[in-house]
Image (cartoon, rainbow, N blue to C red; front, side, top):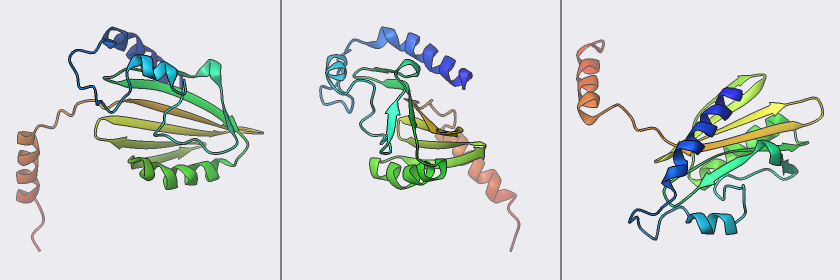
Length: 163
């Protein structure tokens, strides 16, 4: 989890220079920096939080401007971890997030994405509570060009077993 925090901290520092509007559209899908501070600070409007959870302020941060957003929000609450996982399975599609996968190994890591962003939700059951970590960041550009995709399809069909 520390590695994830370090990555987001690095993105935060690198993104600090990108706070000016460089001729971008005023109708951006993200609010401007001044609007972001006026809005519900440290909350993503498109990532729901189950009832009964409170933010852990000293372990949360968000950077958002008119070009990007990155953040890690942590919450603590009483509901069962399995109920939280089901909550996100049900709710995230309503906010236009597509589930990629769920990895379970004591804690549950749920990966979601959409066109330009990724969201990783970690559900950590603890003795008397459940902790949720919500990480949102820009999606990395794919190295898979159209030419590479076409070549992959050709190779796949060439070596596919004949029926």
